[in-house]
Image (cartoon, rainbow, N blue to C red; front, side, top):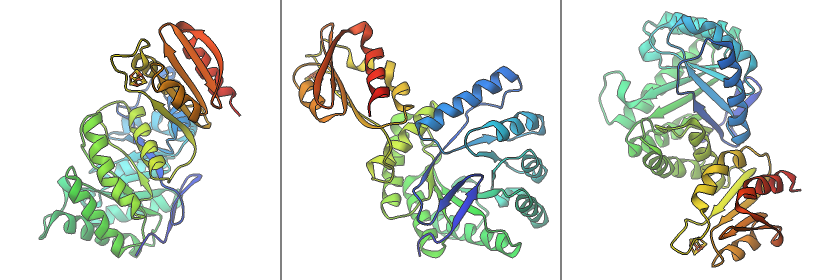
Length: 347
Ligand code: SF4
């Protein structure tokens, strides 16, 4: 039936008619130290500049109430608390000011506990994600994809009976085929927005391939209002992968698109090392540009002509192009500064 609702998460809206939002999940326990919290806020700012719209934190104990409240107040993007088993923790996270919580109603226990969470979320203008993973479904008959979709519809019914509709649903499996099937089934029966992801998808290569295969199909079919690419690796890489997927599908326009040569035996310039040294900084620049990083004269000048900004390294000489025209020649030790400066100053 297609998504026909919008959900508010602090100042962000997701759902019907809106481009998909990118999420990640912080991969460590919340710090208590104020300097570390300030540093985390800066890191969230940098993730936001890379294209991350929402960040989630595990909330396993009230011991983390103060750091969570601090982040909910200071984070430049909405904060989600991930809660399992204990409904009192969900109430506590909402009281701390988070903008959304993720729960699996099935592991919260009695229905009255879920109802208390819904009442509190309504009072705090927060959203809720019903997050179902294939590994933690209630016992039932049928294929995992059918069971996941039907379970989500049952929980949504509970939520609606309590008058709560600011809800997003996720149906994640470590099997990408089950993930695709479950989300297709759900989208055919409900207009609630879906948060997409393949769970426990592995390291960078494994996760990006599997997630792109699954989420690419769903997003191409108009299914999915937000996504996380789960990677056993840096959260910045999760954001980069999700943004790149959306851009490849034409669902996100802004940002730096990097074209770089893989490097081969002809290279006299270390394009791999250079890209590794500059990539993260490049991706936080709020411009809509194609940047080429090339390793020799074979394809370098050609790619440089079709990029907005480019460098081609030939030995220790780095040629900088802007708008397809050669504008400067610098030494290898100045190349990073010259490239970042050119990208930051580009119109
Ligand atoms: S641009 Fe040059 S160094 Fe890079 S892959 Fe092509 S031929 Fe090799």
